[in-house]
Length: 284
Ligand code: PMP
Image 1 (cartoon, rainbow, N blue to C red):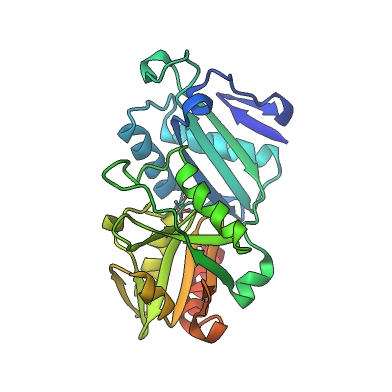
Image 2 (cartoon, rainbow, N blue to C red):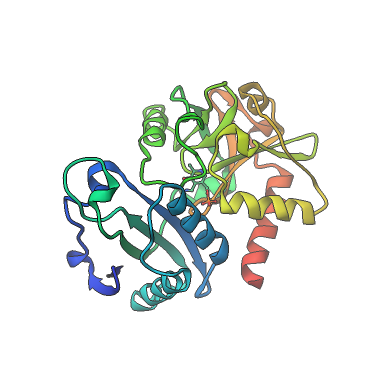
């Protein structure tokens, strides 16, 4: 495997960052998880815009243009024969010295990995996935802007650990007000009375690229779509529930804690949206 690292394609074994990189020392950096289908980068512009906005918000200068980053991803895909796969694009604060100050790091480091990813077992896409509601609350938006896709995932990892302890693959996180926020690496949707509902940005969530695509597709299918505050009891009482994310795509949820959703079966609107999503990918 070849990894693109600061301008060069290097062997996986040589793709190393300094232990003094503030990405390693402090989780200081930003990233994107991106899909490629049929050799093309899916939602490329949206990912590049979010990457550069995340970096700007943490005042990290990316030492490449958007086009150079896109070229780097294409090179990495080509070098690894990845046509349908997943790209992890990471920008760290770069090598510095001990001490938090980003001013200790003269230049950010950028790397791109092109590989395969399978977050959840295939059969769960057909049968649905059980999840829990985590006790770990999502970091408040007043403390850290959740629209920054940063290298600090410990909050989400603690919720993921709860999920694994409970024997399920994913956890839904509430915000500090007890409202539904997002899953540890995915956005949350429910269907109630044929309306497609998802928490608003003010719930303190990452504005997922897939979330945006699914909202658009639901509109095109003529479904009622609303960003709306969702409470845990709305999850339990939902007709359907599903999660969206670049790696996960659209994954149906059929059980939340001990409550089955939609009679424990994947619902018709989830199926319609999934079909439309795959058609969109094929067309593009
Ligand atoms: N929320 C969180 C916390 C995430 O990390 C992600 C991405 N893995 C998402 C939502 C989904 O975003 P996207 O659709 O852009 O992958």
